[in-house]
Length: 208
Image (cartoon, rainbow, N blue to C red; front, side, top):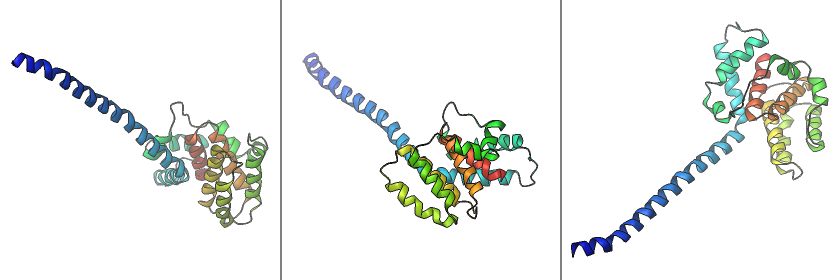
């Protein structure tokens, strides 16, 4: 009788275990996606804040201005950024900081680089409008237009919002040269990744 009972119970136990195992797999597979989506959304909204964090951390380390050459600044900013958890979260596997020659493009050769930017005519019109603004305070009004513009794709909106946010964080007094540097630094950075854009703009801010 006991043997019969065990034989009858075996399929029920197997079915129950199988369900539990399947549910466990679904939970394990679903959870990373949730975390990843939350992280991605959070990072995409706060890129300009990460720039501010890197600049602040860099300045606290280099209070005595001991690191003056461009090469030294890049190396120190690289070390500082590697210790920032928010920055580390957006760094892709193939990330590399800009070389001196690459950095000089947005630090010094920005006029020529601005002309050569690989952007759509729509993005170019926004950039030109940014350059023409007399006061940085007017940049905030442009964010609404960018967010509601159906002719911009998500990557273009991300670039424009990031650029406007970084310009808003700095009192450039409407200086078109500063704006051009910022535009070139952000745009050339996004050709690589969000991390490259953040690093470029942070380097620009600590250099000027």
